[in-house]
Image 1 (cartoon, rainbow, N blue to C red):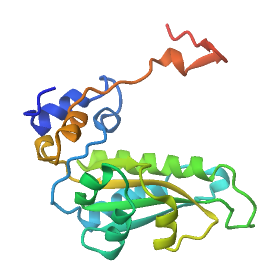
Image 2 (cartoon, rainbow, N blue to C red; image 1 turned 30 degrees about the vertical axis):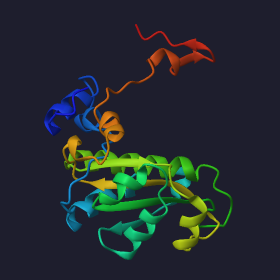
Image 3 (cartoon, rainbow, N blue to C red; image 1 turned 45 degrees about the vertical axis):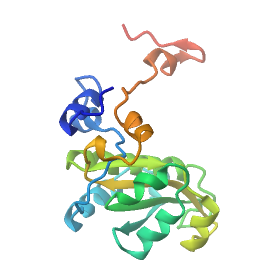
Image 4 (cartoon, one colour; image 1 turned 60 degrees about the vertical axis):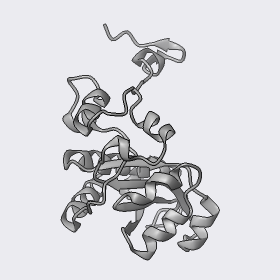
Length: 207
């Protein structure tokens, strides 16, 4: 794939098929982020979307620790990133760590669906960000022990992904050829027949 693709050309290539909601079709996970900051008003909108996600017994177990550019929290989250995530993610305007409270606040009982609910809330957040023209990229590549210690996270909270959130920049601005290649590669997804089933191992007939 050519490294001379513009942002608009790259986004067009990355879009999912037509017929889906625009935010779903347009959402993908870039790594090239600009130095433009996300406004507090738009940040409030993306977290408001997360607030309205469904959850088991309406427990709403999600918590987000948010680091804005140049803040101590941003620096702390960035310091725990591993591998090539260190090369690009700290440039994002916002770094976010998602957490799931594994106990219900109402009675202290174990919430076995807390992580699922965090995923639902984060999905809402990501789609709202996409609708606002804001890019997101979630990462598992961080030192879990280090981030729990540096952010003083209680053991009852399960660690989710770290998310880079901000405005997309040109792919050619990434710091090395490998990242540029990853940025400009085509997306692929499993066919529906592999995960939409009428019985285990039997694809559902969708016509």
